[in-house]
Length: 296
Ligand code: PHE
Ligand code: FE
Image (cartoon, rainbow, N blue to C red; front, side, top):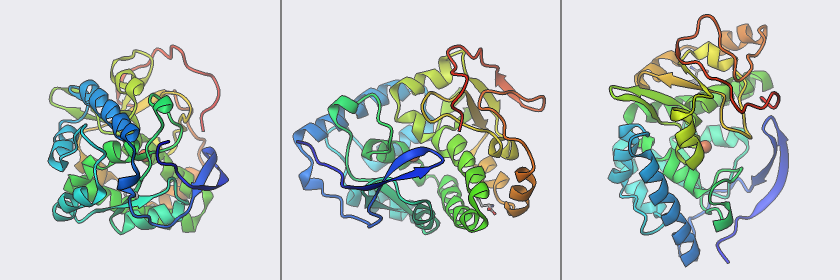
């Protein structure tokens, strides 16, 4: 048996029915990981490092090395924290899994990044519908070493607390930004488009699909456009948004979003695969294989 998460209940959200765990911060029970868990980590780590070599943002790959992440064993949060605290003042905290939104925002606003302590089972190696240790640690943690991205994540947490106070519509508008940047973002490097989104780097199939498939759109980052765009939770994305730099992300999100939420509330949302006149188009998707419904 591998280490098991402790679920408490299911909650209906805009992302469907999701398991919610205890909101408590938990000590990473490192000694309870079995040989099988470490082997799963090794398999996933090796496989993704190979796929991501010329696909992930250079910095993402470099930072994994700076953290000392290797296939040899599941990293210890304490070890990563020694590097992280010194670099950007962020800290990883262990959690059972997805947190209620406000709890999650509050952690980010205080430069604490929640990491699920348990790892997927071997039969879930290619796909798991909820974040596990591999997604959180391999996918999210590396860019927390980047000072600008680290600031962006804190600002997002503060923005989340604020949006939560404004209402459900503001919150889902803000969630789209997280989705299309932190989870599924692409960045333009000198040598071409690269991945920085955690949802992509932790997925074998989407790491290739997002850059090489003719099906999806690849469009330039545009804050309000993204905040109006619906997305996919059960298939690869129909559209990826490309930033020029993390500074661009930081700068674009500096203004107070309150008037933006008010303005966008009066506008229609945009289907996940749609291209607009004003879009900066890196690639217009063929739409091959797209499901007609299911954008959230
Ligand atoms: N500027 C945003 C606000 O006022 C906060 C924010 C920053 C949101 C960065 C997302 C990312 O709500
Ligand atoms: Fe994530």
